[in-house]
Amino acid sequence: MSHHLAKRPSDNATTMASSAAKRARDPSSPAFPTNKEASELPHKTRIFYDILASRADDDMDAALDEADIRGVTTADVEQVLHLSYAHPHAAAAFFHWAGHWHLGHDNHSPYSWNLVVDILGANRLFTRIPGCSPLKAFMDDMPRYGMARDMSALNSFLSALCRADRLDDARAAIPVAHAEAGTLLDADSYAILLECCEAAADTRGARDVCDEMVHDIGVGPDNMPAYEAFLAMLVSSNSSMALLEAMYYLDFLNKRSCSPGAGERFFCAVVAVHLEAGELRGATYLWDKFVGRRGLVPDMEMYNTMIMLQGSLGHVEVIVDYLDDMIFNGLVPDTNTYNVFLLILLERRELHKAATIFSEMVKNECWPNEGNCSLALRLFLDARYWETGIRIWSCVVENGLPPLEECGNMLVSKLKDDKLSSSTLSKLKLCMQKIKKRDIYDDLLRKWEAH
Image 1: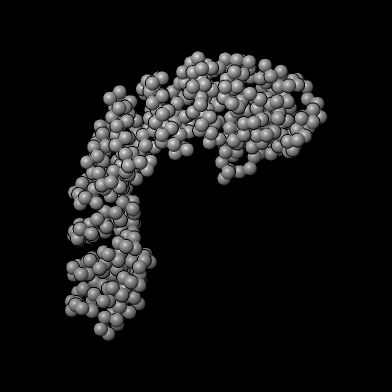
Image 2: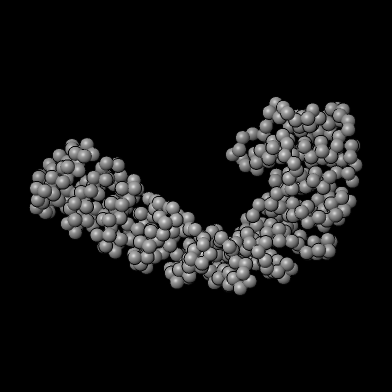
């Protein structure tokens, strides 16, 4: 659930602003662009931009005065603010300076206010804007600045509070909005508040916000992302009643035809909880509901989770169905999928099926992990499945899989106790020759003969 400011018509300044905002919010992004990189900006904007990017906060007003630029317009202010996400203090100072000396605060555009609130919120700074803290003062000032207590402006403010981790202030918006604006919050407002609760891992607060939302605006399809975030947070909490509570809310939404339509996020979270609890019936019900009836196309993680759950209960045939279903949906089982299934088969001593899966995974260039290599080799050799055991050993050698030395010692130990036919030794020799490891075969043969 991301909530952004309304967009202006696209131009060079707007394009650069988008990049600047991204860089300011993402520490891994490149540095804020220089004046030279913004060469196509209007002359006034470029001068202001250079001042904001290079001057200290304490002499900002003086620097702006010294520039001696006349005729500053609301469009100029908006352009400069667009590029100032990396300089929040300077942006606030410029906003105040422009309003005081050129526009009169009454003539600042609502969009400029939205921008400066967003800049300060993104950088977790609020004290620099007069009238924006607390929320009541902000709402009182909205008509003064031509904002008419517009819900989009309020939502922009709430979104900024969320980014600043000010959950208490954001939640205070509900009664304040009722009392001061004389109107109810809209679906977007509650989605923002639920996002804030989620970021703070405040399950109790999320319940309160959700209940308030249902009371004030009812339940409708417009707020589907909020429902999904709320349900996902419930099942991910540490409460012993988390799963039961999530199912209660899901049923509540189902009856009103408003449970998450796609629901990938909630589905992954709730199936994972079912896996931990070993609740196959509930997981199967959800799979049928989301995948069978609603057409949700599962991703690899969903399939792997269900495979683990079915495997923990020994339902091998169902796992095969999942694998077929994956391929039908354009997903090729990955290394993790194969290793999960292989381990299940090995633990159940279903060696014939395990041999088939091993062949398939190697054919698809998916290699058994260390635990599966060791377990598979031991089980197949113990059962005198020499050919499969040799193929596993060859796979280990060819791909340098761990535990290489342990598997080699195990192979010698098992071979020395049995009188192998010449054909078995020939197969081992052939396998080693194919992968150009004849020296390893010779070493194994010497160890075997020494015993």
